[in-house]
Amino acid sequence: MVHGHSLLVLVISVLAVSLIMLRQRLMVLIRRGRTALVRQDLERLAQFDMLTALPNRTRFIAKLGKALSIADRAGPGFAVICLDLNGFKSVNDLFGHEAGNDILRRAAARIRGTIRDTDLLARLGGDEFGIVQELATQPQAANALAERLIEAFAQPFVIDHQPITLGISLGLALAPQDGAEPAQLLRSAEMSLHRAKHAGPGTACYFAPEMEIILRERKKMEADLRLALTSDQFYLDYQPVFDAGCNRQAPMPVGFEALLRWKHPIRGRVAPMDFIPLAEELGLILPLGRQVLYMACAEAATWHHPWRVAVNISAVQFKQKNLVAMVSECLASTGLDPRRLELELTEAVLIENAALALENLRALKALGISIVLDDFGTGYSSLGYLHEYPFDRLKIDRSFVTGLGQNHHSDAIVSSILALCRELRLAVTAEGVETELQFNLLRAKSCDQIQGFLLGRPGKVSAFAEVVAETIH
Image (cartoon, rainbow, N blue to C red):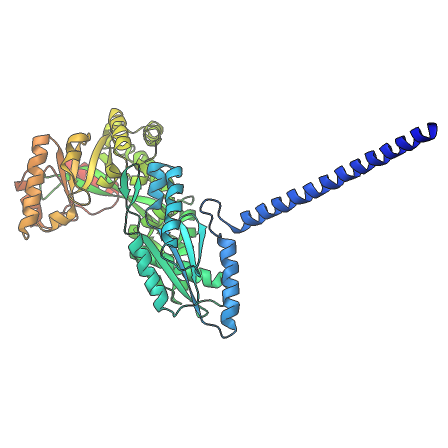
């Protein structure tokens, strides 16, 4: 009996040890399974974009390498197409990042609808997508695909029941002639895309060797622009504004418009049209705009005559929720009387976010600042703006002033604007006045103020201060 009991204990012990070993073995297998799943997830994260489920830049470059290897072995060439959405940043700014992500997913679906199953589509980053088009006659197949893509994106997206049209720009490169290595080939396509974006929405550009030179120069300009922000290379010139009833022989300014200038130590003077758009594209317009405002207010505070100073505010600046606080801080730190500051903005500011625009305008007016609607008569001109927004003055665009006395339409438009503003009790400045005929016609039509090369070119305020001092004495 004892012997039987011992045997039973032994069997139970063996079974217990076996169960423990089996459990340990199962745990090892589970851990291995989990590790394999984790490894698969990590590999997928490394190769695919989680938002759109498309291959990412890494997988795209790997595909380029395989396609180039085939082409090297006397295979057919292929096309690489890079494209991005025009105006995508404004979607994020106006509707939020969730709406932007939704647009990217829908954009990916639209692109898929234009390509073949054998083509590779990838999201390269941001709003940029890439396509590898193999097994096709080039460049005819790439041309046809570019046309289909442009047509597909001509249809608006709908966000919060609002139709939003986001066109595309396309850069194309052909392999192997535009790049023998994957990175070089992708770089060629992206340089082409950059060229297409500057040519305008709905444009497709093929790579050309001279684009390398253009891109290198652009990169150098970008670096120079960033350095200029911190090395006192920017300064202001001031263009005078005159009362239309002034003495033509000895005109006296009533104010000045601050105009940004860049003097590079090697390039010399860089034209605003060459660096302002670049600053906007690089996101440098905010620190640059802040610098301009502070310089203008600080310099105006030192003038011996209490002239008004006008500063242009970009649409990007105006969308900032801290704009009013920044302007208030600037006035306090420079000591400039708010009644001497004018902020000029264009109609584009009002289009993008009407509610925020009205809120900011009212808050700025409460500080004592004057608000000027610049370039009136162009862009999205609407008489509703003059009624809804608290403007103190508007500026007639120079394109209408140029045609005065020569073009019946210009005469009619300028006369209508002046008549309307008299009824609304809005002051009017005509900019771009360069001839005696224009000056006399504007004065005869009771325009309030004149600005242009005829009476004063941009320069230093000190030159005008000396004239005023001599006149007074």
